[in-house]
Amino acid sequence: MITLTGKSVFGGIAIGPLVFYKRNEITIKRNRIEDTEQEIRRFTDARDQAVSQLKALYEKALEDVGESNAMIFEIHQMMLEDLDYQESVVNIITTQGVNAEYAIGTTADNFAAMFAAMDDAYMQGRAADVKDVSERLLQILSDNGGEGMKLVEPAIIAADDLVPSETVQLDKDNVLSFITMFGSANSHTAILARTMNIPAVIGLGEALKPEYDGRLAVVDGLEGVVYIDPDDATLAKMRSKQAEELAKKALLEELKGKENVTKSGQKIHIYANIGNLGDVGSVLKNDAGGIGLFRSEFLYLESETFPTEEQQFSVYKTVAENMAGKRVIIRTLDIGADKQVGYFGLAQEENPALGYRAIRICLKQPEIFKTQLRALYRASAYGQIAIMFPMIISVEEVRRIKDIVREVKEELREEGFAFREDLELGIMIETPAAVMVSRDLAKEVDFFSVGTNDLTQYTLAIDRQNQKLDDFYDAHHPAVLGMIRMAAESAHAEGKWIGICGELAADLSLTEVFLDMKIDELSVAPSMVLPLRKKVRESL
Ligand code: PEP
Ligand code: MG
Image (cartoon, rainbow, N blue to C red; front, side, top):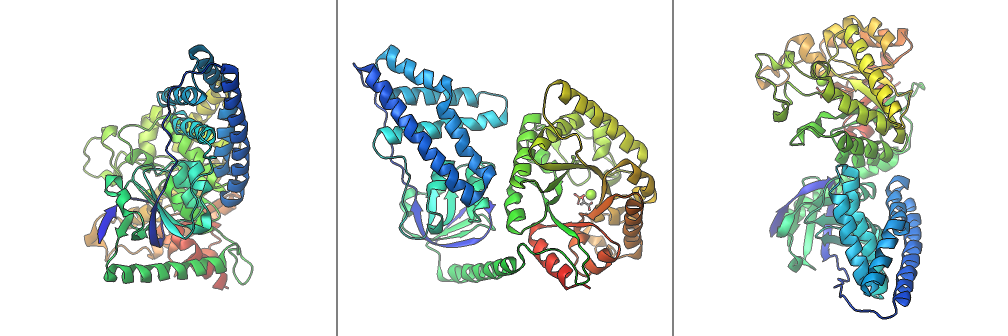
């Protein structure tokens, strides 16, 4: 048995034969051409054929994976119809007297290098797309048709990496899983795999060898592990894990699309918590009504240096688009305490949990805060983004935040960026101070979200990181529940809504208590959405 470890892009277990993706590799030759007019016609005919293929692919993707994922094929069409691209191909044919294939290959290389050199992460990503469309033209010119590989039986698809058109053209019913040597978790292929609900593992490296083609394999998308020629014990273990997954899926099917409503008709929103783009697939798969907490600090934790406005914009925009109009609450960075990032250069502190963290860093270093706010507001044009601020203790802080928000909006307006004016602004209630002044805070914001992890830590004076104190860490302590009730009363008295996004939201023994408090929203790990929906529907 061979065990390979990579990065999980989407969970689930797949068992089946491994098939290496076969491309019709094309070697581009440079041929001298006499009749350049005829060569230009070969190019334009291939382009027209590629455009109609892309139109058909768009329609297929629209049905299979939704509009935001299908968009990539519209972008590909636009690239082919781009005048600069066409002029470059035609110029190379005429000035050098060469074949269309060579002119396309050279144009693709030049354009890809140009995109790759740009500062903007989104534009850098277009380098792969320009190569993808050019490859399509070359396949058409070589009479391979550009239609991709055909699968005759269900299989695990292995590849160095897959471009979006290759992924979508595969017969979905026969694809058990995707595994790749390279590729990023944010690539279109990864997003498509998530949306198609197919287990996927990327970044297996050179250890994934073409000689494994045809061998039996198991993909554990939950752990990011692939077994080739699994032994009997592994196979049995994976089969039972697969059965568990199927049982969960059955629960999903039963509850999918159903309302979160109690027997007496009380409704509550159930949203999901995420740490990065990679989690959005399971939010959708588990039918959450929105994202109640996007811990944006993970963007900073996963980066070697401050993520740029463009990098952040691209992530927030993709999440908003994937959620297709459902509410996406993004919390501004909550760095400090247990989440340390070297490049912030934060000094050692006696009491980091009570130290320089979260909104305190943002208010002291507004340049970091503004970069994030600009990215968030710009992304707001692509979906229903709401912003919330962590670790609030006073009305004064909220007013300072709102001043900075006003400045950011003014700047974006002057620079001509589109954004939503009416974006909801909320705060986390995770300090006893915030609870005590919650009535005044509620006047300033659109919503509250209770961070019970920190609220418990600060209310009970118990370090949430210290395992030795686990016996004392009583999240059901009447003081904690009393705090949540008080915050809920304050919010409602001012006509605002309140959610809970700390771990307590998923505690099914408290669901009825929260319903009694008239909590409007509970945000939990994606895998808890359906068990919580079940609990709500069984409550009186
Ligand atoms: C909380 O404190 O409950 C919370 C949701 O935030 P975090 O766990 O990220 O501190
Ligand atoms: Mg917290």
